[in-house]
Image: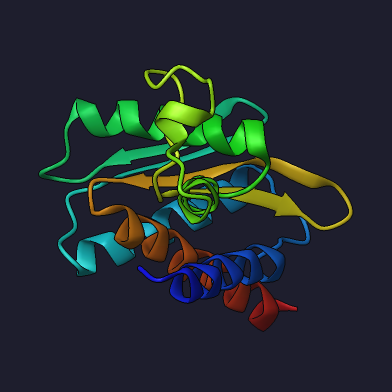
Length: 163
């Protein structure tokens, strides 16, 4: 990836994070978002794990056929990265790569605890800040990220339809 392509991708992900903010987020929202995300994954026959957390509490978790316990471990590592940096795990990794560095070597964080690979996205409530994570693991990192973004976009569209 060229520096210009990397900068454009970073800008796109930053724009997604600004755009995909929720007016509120409760347990029912976690269920709605989670089932929506599982439905999208099923439609693609994606062997993924879906996980949603708020303030450290797991509100939704589902493992589709073909996923494994390794995906659960990836979910935790990616979600911890979101919690620490306040942005998507994909964006963290992209920012390190854009500087010619790797997260694993240069973050000084334990690679068994944190992962800057795409798939975990902050649940940002307007006027509050980041309150949790929605995460997917099982596909290549850009695809994990894309699936989460698609679900958040549809979730927000549904909310607008009911207003």
